Amino acid sequence: MATRYDLTRADLAEVLADQPGYRVDQVWDGLHRRCVAPSAMTELPLPLRDHLEHELPAALTLARESVSENGSTVKWLWQLDDAALVETVLMHYPDRATVCISSQAGCAMACSFCATGQAGFERNLSTGEIVEQVALAVDRARPRRLSNVVLMGMGEPLANYDRVWAAIERLHDDMGLSARHLTVSTVGMVPGIRRLTTEALPVNLAVSLHAANDTLRNELVPINRRYPLADLTDACRNYLAAKGRRLSFEWALIAGVNDRPSDAVELAVIARPLGAHVNLIPLNPTPGYATPGTPPSGVRDFRDQLRASGVNATIRQNRGTDIDAACGQLRAAAASSPVELRR
Ligand code: SAH
Image 1: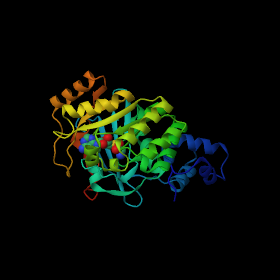
Image 2: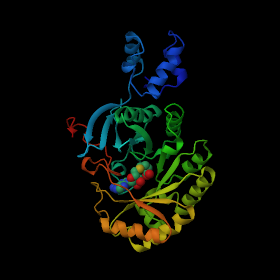
Image 3: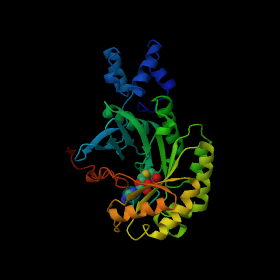
Image 4: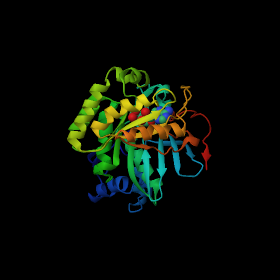
C-alpha cells in the first residue's frame, strides 16, 4: 500500500473519489501545509478521518527517540514497513529549526570514517519516506518554524536521484520550503551533480570533500576512484555557473590525516577559485575508525590558515554527540533494544 506521502494529488483524488471535490485540497493541504495526520484533520467528518488513517498509512513508525542533554537536538529512529531502519535529526534554534533527513537505509559509499558507511547499504527510501521525515519535523518543531532541510542524514542522496528529487519538489511546491533552504549533500557523485545542474530548482549543494588530493581522497572516500577531483570540481563549477548558489565543502578534520598545513594549502587551491565555503568539523568518533578527530586548537589553526589564503571557512557547531546524532554517527543500530527516551 502506498504511504501517505507517496501518493500524488491524483492518487489522493482517487482515494477521495466519492467525496466532494474540495476534500482533495483540504486533505492535501492538511498533509503538506499543516503537516498533520488525517486523524488530526478536525475539519473532516470523523468517519472520513478514520477512513483516511487506514487508506493513507504512515510510512515511519517510531522505534526510538533520543533527546540531547540540553534538549536542542532530537534524534528519531524510524522503522519502515519492511523493518529497515533510518534516522532523522531535528535541531532547534531559538526561533527556527533545521531537520537533517535520510535518503537511504544504510549507504553504499563506504567512507571509512562514517558509521553509516561502515554498516553498508540496505535500500533506497521512497519519496514518501523522505517527505514524511520532514512533515513530522515540521509538526514537532512548533512553535518554531522548520526553515531548513538538509539531506545529510543516512545515505547518498544522488544515488537515489529520482526519489530524492521528487521529494525535493514536494517540499518546495507543496510544503512551501524555498530552494535556498534546501541542501543536497553529496559524497561527489558527478553524474548526479550534472543532473542537478539541469533542474529548475536551485538547491544548495554541499560536497563532502575531506581531501583535496586524489591519493588521500581515494582512501577516505572510495567513490573518488570513479569520480576523481578534476571531474568533481568541473561538475561543481558548472553547477555554480548554472545556479549562482553558494557551494560548500564539508571537511571532517582527522588528526594527522587531513589537518596538516599542506592539506589546507591543497584545499585552498580547489576552494578559492570556486568561491566555495568550507565547513570544518572535527571528526566524530565511530566504532569502525580508530583515528581521532583534530583537537579544537588544531581545528582553529586549520580554519585560520584557510582564511589567510582567502577561503571562507567556518567551524560547524557540533550537535548531538551525546546521543550519537552528530555528523557521520547515524547507524540506526540496536533496534531490538527497548524504546528509550532521554531528556
Ligand atoms: N552521502 C552524503 C550525505 C551524508 S552527509 C554525503 O556524503 O555528503 C553526512 C556528512 O557527515 C558528510 O559530509 C560526511 O562526510 C560527514 N561525516 C561522515 N562521517 C563523519 C564523522 N565521523 N565525523 C564527522 N563528519 C562525518
